[in-house]
Length: 383
Ligand SMILES: Nc1ncnc2c1ncn2[C@@H]1O[C@H](COP(=O)(O)OP(=O)(O)OP(=O)(O)O)[C@@H](O)[C@H]1O
Ligand SMILES: [Mg+2]
Image (cartoon, rainbow, N blue to C red; front, side):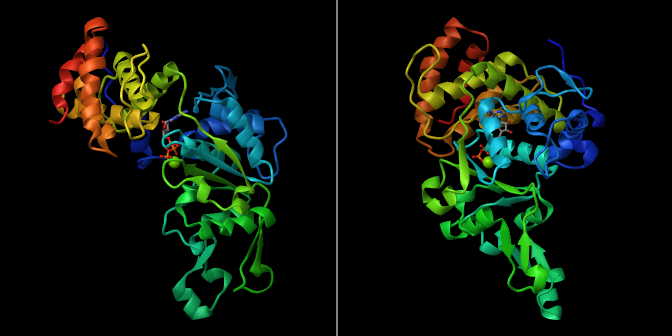
């Protein structure tokens, strides 16, 4: 099997830019520029690309070269959902993406913001401690004391900036904010204005510019959307993002994403498809409670998302590079699988052991290969 080439700094995006993770508009700058140059369709006011080009950016160009660049698919799943999301952003309602953890809600919101507004960094992270000021605006207290409430002393929030510049604003995990704080958005979404009563004249009212809208995300496992006020719900169009249905697509995604992340960390490790296939099978079996060949297993109580399959592969890859022979194998996978499965409930260790003693054992005898390696790696399960 061919060894991966040693990484050079040129192959490593993060090393050349000095950032651990570039925002989407920088990571995909060449694609966005190519799409923009070839885009001759009408664009909603304030948008960088037409709705069709935004869709192509997210769902790919099916091998076709656009402005000299083939656009790869970034979101695997329901393309119609992507189209509806884009339509919502051009309407007068906000977009709310809900779903299980790790179903690419944040990724979609970042890609949409990068394609529509050229920036994905106008983002508010919702927490139980988020305040109204963090959503609207706050003050630089030194300037406030020195010169009173002036435009110079006002510290704009990402939302304020998005309204002023006509750009999309992302509100991550919105349902983790107290409902009364979430409701700050009600008047902003319906009136598209933000009052600043402390300032005078024109400065006391901010009218949103065309192109402004809000993309919210909410996780169905944490605090659910049922706590969101009906007034706020009515101002959003909801889209539920489902886990990837097709195992082939999930395998391709995990291989591509973990390969990219390992590349970016500059390690030299060989990630083969057969190992990823086994990992994805294990995740799907424990997630659904049913193996692909119809055997019932106990479902893990934690979420085992595609995003977690990517991070287990990444950790296992680093492990293989640091402490192994640079070949990602079942032993590294087993060592890192445990943490992902047991994170919510230590009692799931029994379920995992049972899975190894039944499903993995059976496949180690019939399918052999990586399954046999994985069965041998059961010694890494905690006692
Ligand atoms: N359908 C999918 N298409 C493409 N990538 C996916 C898909 N599902 C999961 N992923 C992978 O999962 C990663 C993380 O997803 P993301 O953080 O956007 O999930 P999330 O839904 O926001 O999760 P959370 O609710 O925990 O915030 C993505 O970067 C991608 O690698
Ligand atoms: Mg998220």
